[in-house]
Image (cartoon, rainbow, N blue to C red):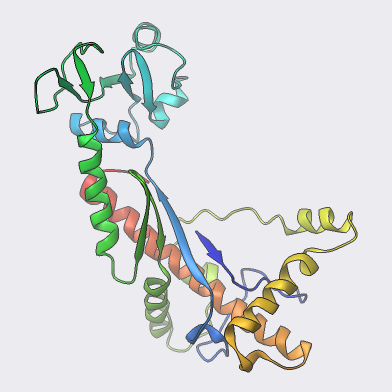
Length: 280
């Protein structure tokens, strides 16, 4: 997940484990520019669609999709066996890796209006059909758009950018209600446990900026604070110390919101797999 226009950690060393109480003062309830944006991208989409059609478990069975003698989509188990797009030919894979299952992409025969899966389609008599994948795409986007509090932006047939901010706010409110006023730790109490965290490379970035006579705080944190103060209005105006304190409180709240967003995204991924058997 990504967020834009949020404040960074303060000079006091706060990180993603900062906690926040229900009464924290921040501009999140008003014109806060913080948004939780998730990028949803289907795994080896065309291969998944055909694997599901054939009853193949794409999570464990090597599977690849063929078009006119070349692989155009290869699932992760097949990649682990050494199959790559536009590398080995299907005939070579059949000889050397007989456990890899394959299917040709859907095609229309000349003069026909329905796509099919002939054993040996020919490029001079058949035309590729994308309809199975468009149909699967429509099913996936229907699930995304049905989630309350989620705004969907289509990026392609198998990917989308989704704004889950409002859904995350509702999720966080439910977690807070269950906590009965207790302080929440973003990672321990709010984040979906299966979420993979990006490695913290702040020390590496600080060293890089330091070697160039500046700092991450000067390049990123302070400009972001200034942006947030301008976006949120007069309640954050005042001395620098006051602004840093207010920004830290807002940052803590954003940590919680971002972790709540991980729950929303996990729920969507689980629903897509439960209903359609597609991983993303």
